[in-house]
Length: 292
Ligand SMILES: Nc1nc2c(ncn2[C@@H]2O[C@H](COP(=O)(O)OP(=O)(O)OP(=O)(O)O)[C@@H](O)[C@H]2O)c(=O)[nH]1
Ligand SMILES: [Mg+2]
Ligand SMILES: [Zn+2]
Image (cartoon, rainbow, N blue to C red; front, side, top):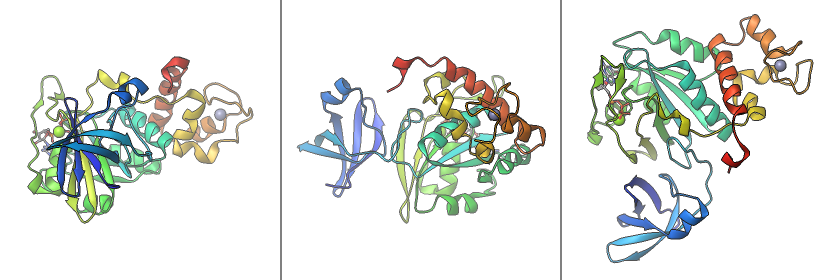
């Protein structure tokens, strides 16, 4: 059927939502040979034998991500927290750059506002022109606003482990009863409670994928943004691009740089610019064979 979609990937199995229920599938070997893997969110064609099936074809994707491994998303919800585990702005900026490159709308959600005020972090991103919701899965603050923002869309919830992705989804839809984990106060991080990606229907054409959280180590395996394209993935730089003295300005140390002038006038957030520089340095190291 046209609308058969992978809603869960786990241990080499793909669970495909069809008109008459969920079918457990394996993927054809050709996908591995071609270097593609089916993703949660993919529309697929399957063949069936008895109760199980095989993913035969992946229909063209609107977009796809390596981390979280999802396809065809309308909205990337980036969960952050100012309480333990704290979210580094660099992680947010890195995911924002990837969303920017894919042309996917991001939404920043600063959670755990009951434990630690999220206004500071929220302010940085509001000033940079992003949509931000401040929430608490504990008190319900901001949940209605978040529900309205994701309504009718397919969202992927991402963020470091323990920020409350599963808790927020439970707050949006208590029937989900997703497992939530503890946070290690000592180590300052979550415990990777969510182990697989799964897409849930929240009703009224709203879908949300819960995904395993990032640890501080595994961001290496994230999508790559090339150094020359990086500036375009920073939407807050857009008003200044093309206005530098040198047309090939990398916005680092070049004279007459319009981006750095905007930074000095306070029109670009310092942490955003720092993240740009860090990502640029990382992008310089990308080898041609690492690109698809
Ligand atoms: N006080 C408070 N605690 C929260 C809030 N959101 C989540 N928590 C707690 O934070 C811990 C981690 O929450 P999870 O929902 O498991 O976090 P997660 O982002 O899904 O983590 P992973 O699945 O490991 O990626 C749990 O103990 C939650 O009860 C919140 O807004 N306020
Ligand atoms: Mg979780
Ligand atoms: Zn410049």
